[in-house]
Structure formats: C-alpha cells, structure tokens
Length: 117
Image 1 (cartoon, helix red, strand yellow):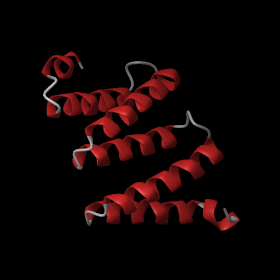
Image 2 (cartoon, one colour):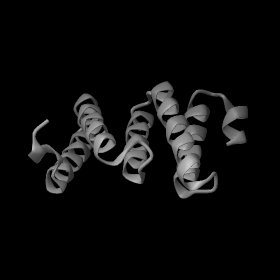
Image 3 (cartoon, one colour):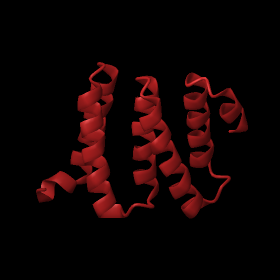
Image 4 (tube, rainbow, N blue to C red):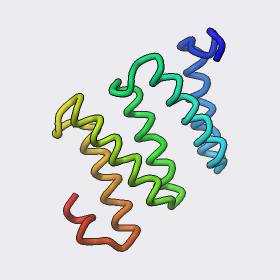
C-alpha cells in the first residue's frame, strides 16, 4: 500500500467507486473495493471505529440486495457485535444491522427468527 492510498481523498474516491460498481450491478467489483477500503480503514482507525463498522454494514447491505443472505447475516452479526461493544446495544448501527438480519431471515423463510429481531 502506498502512502497516497490512505489519503482521505483517495479513500473517498474508492468509496465512490464502490457505490458506482454496486449501482451498475458489478457485485464482485463493489465487494472487492469495499473489502480493500475495510482493510485500509481497519489499519488506520482500528476495528471498532464507526467508519469501519459502517463499511461492514455497507457490504452486508450489498450482499442482502444481491440475495446472498448467509454472507449478509455474517456481516450484520459482526457489525452488531462491534457496535454493541463501542456504542451499546441501543445504538443506531445496532438497530440498522438488526433490521438487515431480520430481512435476511425473512428472505430465508425463517420467519420466527425474523420476527424476534
């Protein structure tokens, strides 16, 4: 990784690229770009930073939209656990992630679990 790879403007460009790839239906490209961003931001900010948790949630939402429910569930669970540690169980990130897990369970026809979220 080059020094310029971690500059705020460079990271913003990567975030924009991931959004464009996602909107264009390029799941592989978007996931690869988000994972790159996740790696860089984890190194810079630490795993429990809010930006890192938002990226995990973004990847989970992308997987949910693409009907990759198990991958989405795993990431939402990770985001929930990290958010609870940092912000408490009543945080906005936990609520958003719980909504995502409920949507995954509903899509998997696991309605009892979906309703418990």
